[in-house]
Image (tube, rainbow, N blue to C red):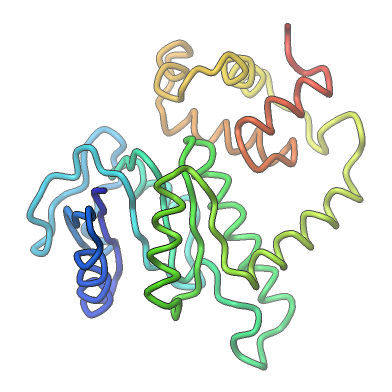
Length: 244
């Protein structure tokens, strides 16, 4: 399994690199600060002083994020790295139990950010993991392994908060229609998703970039309240939004 590590802190990069290299079959192909990454979707990430191999055929992107991360910015990094299997984000899930003075509003903000990032990752058909920055080595290894298999692994506290938020959303959601209607372009993308066509081929058919396709898929999932591409298609079919 080929892994690329992103963190603004040299000590964190070194620690994660050492942890990964202890795991049988894991290969760290590079490590860099966020600023060292190109945000161009047409070009692989630039190598840093710590990166010695190409990111071609990269399996997992292991990200170290702070609480103010921007999901769109992270998407730019992923467009540069193009991991094949999944993404694991440390710091995207600071545990609700951490910090007694942490407000519920702050916890829900972290949950919303992480759900948004998860949807962006899922829009590309990738596995996803979200853990607090102080996650143990065993938790990090487990999350990476799960994401590599296309699964989603969430910190327990974040999962409870996210599920509670989803439950509140489900109660408020209209039964037959999305809260916000799909645009004509989103309906085109949805129709191709239903045919099992991957993002790259959707981009070619619609003459748009993969980056744009990913944002359309993410918007579709958000509007339909779906956590995956499959759920989005299933929900759309149930609501009569697909031409069969």
